[in-house]
Amino acid sequence: MGSFSLIVATQDWHPRGHSSFASSHAGKKPFDSIIYGDEHQTLWPDHCIQGTKGADFPALLDGKPVEAIFRKGTDPLIDSYSGFYDKDRRKSTGLAGYLRDKDVADVYLTGLAGDICVFETAMDSLREGFATYFVQDATRPLDAGRLPELLRQFTAQGGIVLQCGDLL
Image 1 (cartoon, rainbow, N blue to C red):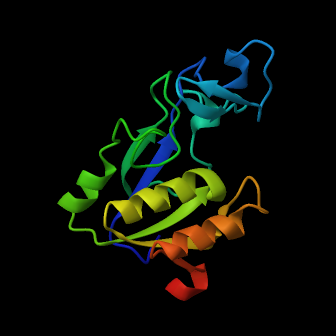
Image 2: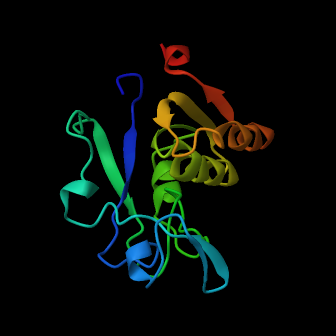
């Protein structure tokens, strides 16, 4: 984090009973897929529930340099992967405007899960016009086998994949 003048974070912040949780759908289990509204929805294990230890940042993460936290997944009826928008791009988190107000041009992304939330944030960052960097060795995917194809999609849209050592 010492390499950057501005650090922001995103945080899953789901209410109990979120519609993306398998436990909210009778007879369904995590990773099942359903049609919810007009969209396909992957059902997840209950996670990052507001105000619980599971929603906290890791204890080893030094939060002092983090200037702002953008919470996502707060609407019980709408899933959210990207740090910029909900899954259907109906609601903004305010992240793009915040970054523009701070004259940010380049966005470097790390975190969990590389193939879901980090990837979707990276793609929205590109759509918002930011030069976007996916710091691969500072992310962890849920499905490592899926990540290479997603990174090809990202770079095809102008994104750059790099490693922590490239920043030093």
